[in-house]
Length: 77
Image (cartoon, rainbow, N blue to C red; front, side, top):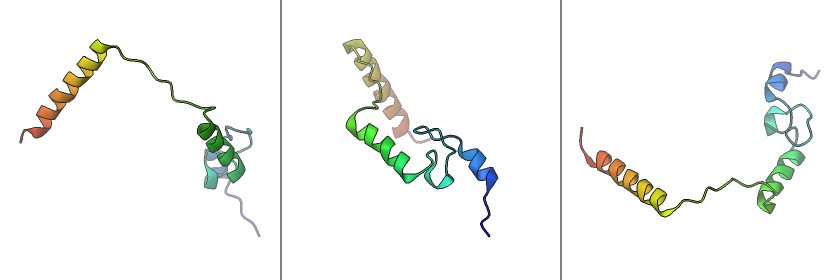
């Protein structure tokens, strides 16, 4: 007898590739195939994380913040 855990199926949601119910083993995907298709999209550059270009003043501000945080870490409290 095969027991289907409906609660875990419900929590898995829909597969972002094909829309089928997700499988907990491949979460959030429904199968190894859909997981591999998603990975291929990342590797081929179809998906990309947006990048915001920073100008010189932004970089200086970031550098200053990093230096200030470093000073805090070096102190013994």
